[in-house]
Image (cartoon, rainbow, N blue to C red; front, side, top):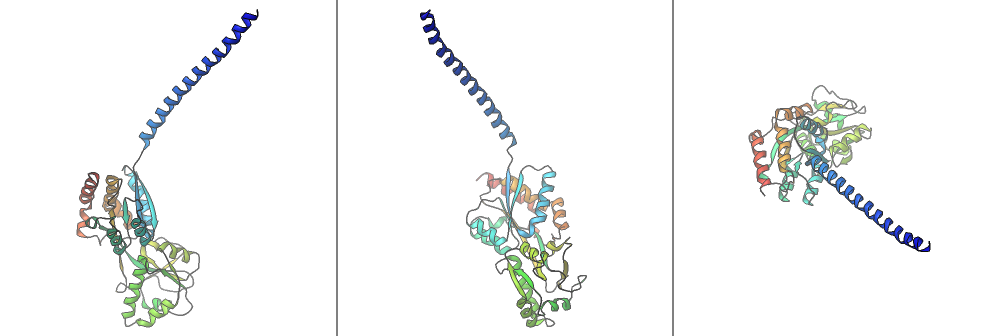
Length: 310
């Protein structure tokens, strides 16, 4: 009886070890199978992501364009980094990863070219804009038509004006407008001096200007015509054509784009009939496109091929 008990005691640990080994083996097989399934589904769901660095004034129109681009059956997801063009050019200079850069002026695009991130020959103008003055209840003006009398009111004491900082494209364009106004006999240096005396804030991008106006922290501000289109909280004051500035928007693929084919496809879409319609519906003009830009489809495709072979 004692011998049987000893034999049984030796058999039990062996059985437990055998059961544990079998359980471990089954676990490994299950994990291997699940791992293969997950890896397979991940590879199937992987989608190219195109990163676009775009001027803040392009926020609304580019988001709509990306939606249209996706609904049209194009592959790849488009993600955006919206900021002042000077900030984006600085990020590119510091090595930030991007596939496309769309600037609100040629100066910041040139900065990206000089930093070695953009091939100068690949830069194309895809849209242009013009300046307009947005204002709230604190300013009275005729929004139906441009008028020097309405502009003169902005130079009178007591108004709070917000503009873009000097390094920002909208700030540069605003100063060009003021320089032209200073040369106009009906406005003169007094207008510019009074206007500048009324400036209470200089913003790093046009969205900052709009925010100040919407919050009632300023009476008027110089923005792009596209920014005020459809805006219900603010009114608009046209700047006479001979004083206005044409804001040029260049675009290009980065030289080290990780998704050159998909990026080129998105740029091509912006030049297409559908992309052009989206731009114009947001108040942008495409008439300023350089002659070479109208062949952007072939150019973009060639650039994609060159990038792919790098």
